[in-house]
Image: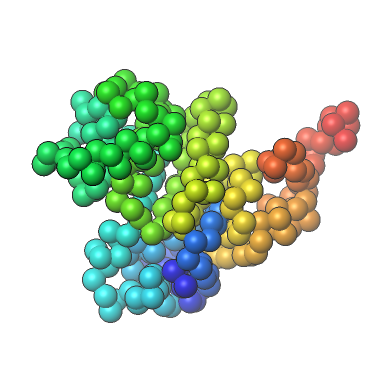
Length: 267
Ligand SMILES: Nc1ncnc2c1ncn2[C@@H]1O[C@H](COP(=O)(O)OP(=O)(O)OP(=O)(O)O)[C@@H](O)[C@H]1O
């Protein structure tokens, strides 16, 4: 078990997370689907030890929160967040290769001359993400989609045992999104790393994410195999509104029933 949450509750002036139970086995790939304000970020913060649970037990890599130095746990987790890409001001002048290399020590710039082995690894990571062409390009001049892939590369440089992709398609146009999803799909197929993909969007949940957690109002609505959860019936209950889910070319598509009724040609 790589993550084990038991009855985790976080209460501030309101209940943010409510009795979360969730178990992740090493090597599994999970999607976390939830609307705005469902508690996705809070849940990630609990796992990474930035928010203390009010009640319940948090175990990561078999260690219990409160009984183990969590900075050691964090070193083994790569959390790639869209909001982080906005905060990378210090990386702006760095070229792609330097951004990826800096992930080895989770630093902003490069403080030491990289070894040949590190260079080789960074180049390998960039190749696997399809961004070799960005090795010499300043981060500042990259598109949003390229920056996102660069940040994934940066996280991979530290050999994380858990890779968290936190809404990585935010702000991407449909082409960049398709490209990024292809990269994620490939990553999930090739890497032994446990990947957690956090999203609002059903169509981003790729076949490689075989397990899904539906998070609603700070609580676990359901956890199960993705193909069992991403159905019209279960997502209608989850969304509290009739929706229709279809699978096309391995992608799930969700339509709100009212829209379908307004345009019967789609049925
Ligand atoms: N420190 C805090 N104090 C009080 N309320 C908080 C705190 N942090 C988060 N919340 C609230 O908890 C709820 C869950 O927030 P969270 O950011 O985890 O949601 P989310 O699922 O990540 O949403 P989004 O998809 O919009 O990013 C929200 O209603 C938020 O306002």
